[in-house]
Image 1 (cartoon, rainbow, N blue to C red):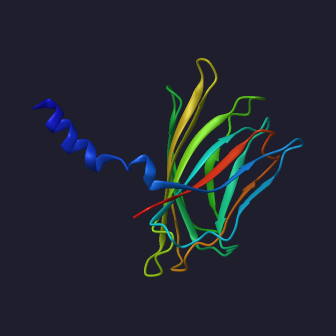
Image 2 (image 1 turned 90 degrees about the horizontal axis):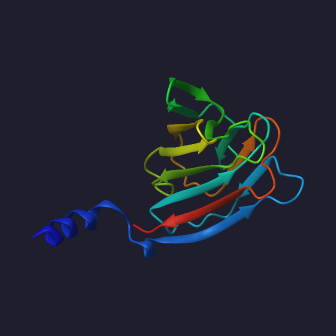
Length: 181
């Protein structure tokens, strides 16, 4: 009975591993890089997922833009906590979705993030983004739950992630996946 119940719940909870297809991966080389670009994104998937493993030894806030749109066509929301402090905030009419990833200001301390871009190719609706990012520094760290929107019905064909200050350190990695519908 337990196997039957678990099977029925698990079948609708998560996509199977063959539902994700790698589109592109960018690994930052020596000297770092302040901008990461994904271009020519095919419109053949239901959703996109961006997996990040990044570092910067200075404060690293990022700006994420779709299709090179620099207009005030984005909004964002976040909640973050570190075990003692909880923060929350929002902004509308922004020129980018900020802070989809967030670094810890500690040299060689990488952090991980998973960013979902929902219905990216649907030309009948605005695009919604959700992310979960965080890091640990052996007793310290933070976790961030974020969401945002791009107020355009255009299909997303490119993604640009730019560091507001500094650059992404060597070995930072960004992997873009397509999720089948």
